Length: 267
Length: 306
Image (cartoon, rainbow over all chains, first blue to last red; front, side):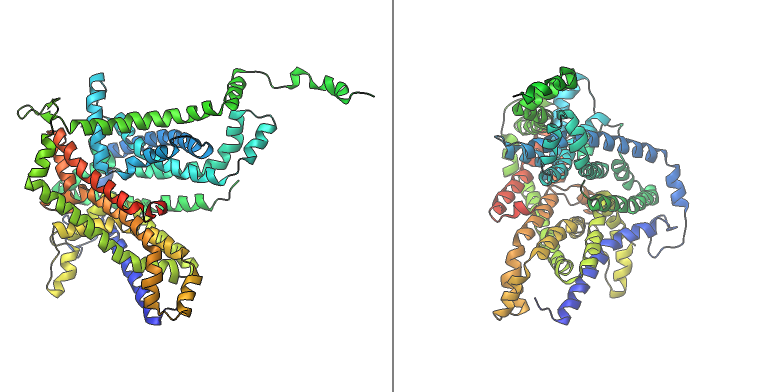
């Protein structure tokens, strides 16, 4: 399609403007973390690193970070195992109800987080509480794993559809049993997909707040819950800003890793 | 005539075969029975999803038909449709539902208007090298976290914040916290979900069709209207599924920048601890709206381009 010079310039301008709108708030958070003013009055009144020091001293923040890491690792581990199993079943076998399996996997992420959250909350209250299992890290992991399964499933299933079964058949012909074939042939072929899925699942769990709100007990605070709690407190603004700034900078990490993983040649 | 098999026979002694360890016996059993393999693979994930998820949803749906004691807030397991009745008759719920629907629709339209030119530029005009870079630039903020971004807007919108400072020379001020702020923040949060499918669609548009349109005398504007837009429609709808359903169920952005505004999500969240049956009944509204929207767009083939 032949575009006029004006049209090209207008389109470039629109894209630049769109990206500027996307990045301006994030840059503002970074700048504000060094803003001496406690109330983020703009323009900044001066440069200061005291909020970074204050954030470093925050003990609740460290505890929340540890909880988030634990919940993320737990949910990722569960999602990796269950998602991979489901991916093998859905790609390697033809069976009645295969479509509903995929649908069931997508459902937790398709429905609003609050519906998933209160559904789990209601179920835990009716089933687990009478058994003596209270709300805490365990219930958070269960909640997160439920919607993380689908991202592992998607990554692994996409990879399995692309690799030919001939390598596995050759392995069986050469005398390897099912588990050896899985360990030495199939697993290396899907390893990078597993890593990408795990990365996504962890990021999803690390950022999640809605389901967490309804599955965490009063004593369990993940990092997003900590941020949300402290947003409401008048004097904690700058410290929240430092945490947000760190999270923005860290966002580059998974993108970089995902690029590395997807660029890896198939072996 | 010698039998070759007989001369080779001593080589095939049983000790050359792998030892029959329990592991190998299990592997053999699995290898011979595909059905058993499938069952073993499906058992754990399906148990988890059906027990933990479908079970929970069922409990939620059932509890919508229960009621709570007005004084103790305890759930009474008495079968009643009162929650749904008050949902349909109370004008307060209708207002909130319509407001939520309006916000979700505005967010979707605004995102589509912003994303179309961006995706067109990234997918068709930009050189391949910068295309990849631009896509990464759109993707990266997705990882920065929901709360971080909502918080960034809270800072910008607040009194004496950046928006006040930017608009002051023109005699304006920040829109403050309310429905416009909610639309802005939700539109900002879900914009990448709209840009990405559109980018892919624009990239995959065959050059031959555009050339044919030009050969037949269509100008760029007409080509855009009659060839390009109909072809990217499934991607547009796929993007709208994200922007629409994510906005429908949202309740945190409203709490952060919405002032006193409430959406369906807030009604659900505020009732969870004290009146779970009512919360369950209210949560049927966004679920039904989303399922209805999915069914309505299923025929366009948009679900395949998710």
